[in-house]
Image (cartoon, rainbow over all chains, first blue to last red):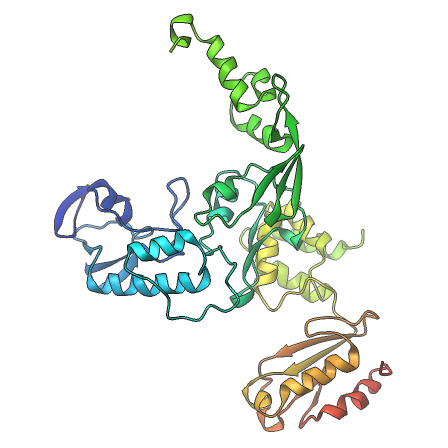
Length: 253
Length: 154
């Protein structure tokens, strides 16, 4: 165990935790954008900055900084507040029309940005990298990545064409905090607009509805042990099918 | 196979890990760009994701994804050249060759790029074709220069 001080509270937490995790344990909320429990810490959005008083005064990203003995942390000091507001102004300048960013900014006392918005009126992507990381770390496909550098930096598939690795699972869209990734099911196809990729959907054996791309099902089969017949039905029918298989006294619930 | 040398370079890397960038540098130097086929070969041989290679290839200015033309034209846009009209020089080059900065002419003779300072600011504005440097450029001069490299103006 490690003893540290967060916002004047003395606490003991297991070694190896980050400041963000330690703060959560004692009910202190720190705003984040690029953090996700299922993924390795990344430290890109800088919103989770906190001030450490010791060993030396500094601003550090709480999602990446591991707790250490005698650490003194202020999660909402003047310095933290001022810096966080500037970060929010930068985010607002990049995504001025994003409802999520606007709300986040407002909740931390930022109404508008003093920075110019240069052709970013439609922009929703904050470059938090969650989509890239979930595809690599959880889905295991690495279908997309950051490309280019500086002002032309963006997230793309290799060669900006339909991805051979994309299984259409939609984890990228699900994890995106600002809704920047558009995925649509139209008829028998799943369209991943951002990734120039279209995948054919499989039909449910029972209800006949289209539900998932074959590529996604194949990939999941490798990871999740399920009866073969359950892969051929949509989630709704799968639930009913599984419920029927339960002993009678359980299925009536 | 068309990319035998690349195959050998990649095979040499199999023994030691963590040398992806030097490998890409060597391949870029050998072919003048990173051919898609070679990137795919690295993916299958060394186990990197294609997206990861594409990310690196587009991050560093050093790498190219398209083959370069026979002659490489660099137009300086560094501070000194810029204030002395470097932008107009670039526009005149683009106009004569009919391509934009970063592009290669359809006959694969010329690739045009802008650079930030070649270290001879006293000659500003500067343009370089392959190893030849042309200082105190004026917009009209490029038409004559380009003829030396075996191409008539459009």
